[in-house]
Length: 280
View 1: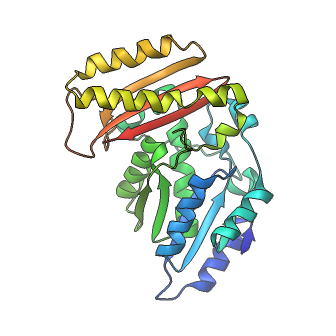
View 2: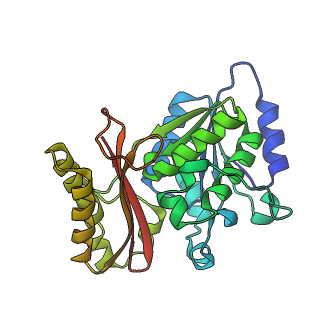
View 3: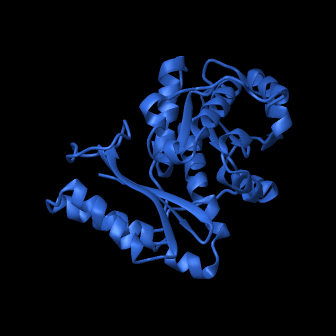
């Protein structure tokens, strides 16, 4: 497995491989890898002739400096896991390598960034769009793999691909969960044992909300129900619970056709911000 830390060395390596039958799969990550990331890598390995994974904690997508500082960095362990998963190439640049100067370009994803993650993390999706755009230009993959756990990010990247005309297929992969339902996340390792035991409550609420909606409860009633349930669990600080269209991420007032209704939630538990969603 090749490991590169500079954009130039990665670019030159990938161009040296260029042939008519080369199909590049790309998995962008911020490291601290878990089985969810590895599932993306394995799917890319199955569907492409060469797989690149980036590991870069992108500073311009963090609106909270403390969150950036606390984000786990485990490059050596990550590379060992990627090699075992069949990854061909890792790109692990420093911030200085990626940004010789602080970017001044501002991306506006319209209504997509006015709700949920966009509303609670100002500037987040601008940072996501800039780094993903840079990585797409550098790697030039045929396919890029993202996890559904970050549903709004998937929608933002889809818009980026459409509006800028990247010749890339976006592959959205199912959320991988622990046996108790907790969505795998790099942030989970920051939970204490006590809080880790509480964390599956988030997925429990998503399932209860889905069941109520499918039994005929109104969306307004379900929104109120979830908020009230979180109030009975004061260890959680609920940021939002929303019933939204699975593609546009805009709030809805009626259930959509199969596969187009999304239940989305973000909550803080023990100082760790957790997000999850359920699409049906």
